[in-house]
Length: 228
Image (cartoon, rainbow, N blue to C red; front, side, top):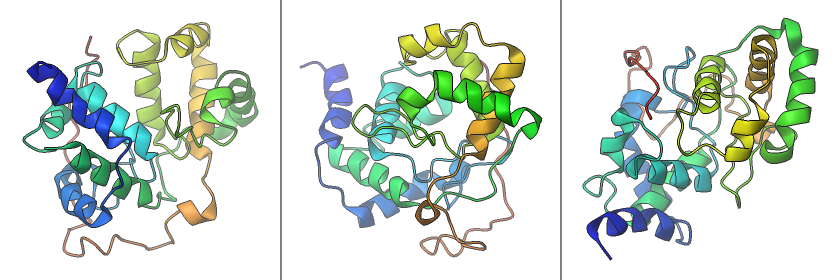
């Protein structure tokens, strides 16, 4: 097995390992600068909400970034063996993120086309992402409910344009004919979907694992561009 395979083997191993949540909490310190101590990212969509994301999805996306199947120069450094040195570390971090409750105050779109958004979602998205955008653990299909509207719009555009190499081919084909109005409507609908009450943070909640973080601070917006 060459060094590249060994580098990526961590992510395959992580799917079958029992996570250590306490170690995941320690590793999550690496993520706070961009995603925040609660994992909520930024409402303007510069950084996504990762709180509550299915652990298999986080593992897959980290692996895809590491292998350059998903271009993300900022994240790439954090997927290196120097940072996540084993499959166990990957599993621990992904499990901790999955346990974080989602924000009630994610970035929203325009809800004037709510009915259209639901129609587009039911016809094109629900079969894979679930009726409420909850995703699928076994198939590594992301939880998209409650994600920031601007982030959803950016990723949708990149997927449709072929700039996300790890995108599902069926999805790419299926969304090609959506109009701009339909695109905006369905992304707004998804941003407005909510997990169960159990998966949402209580009003005023902050992550007690990181009490000293200044919640007034936000990361600067990166200059995103599609990466082939």
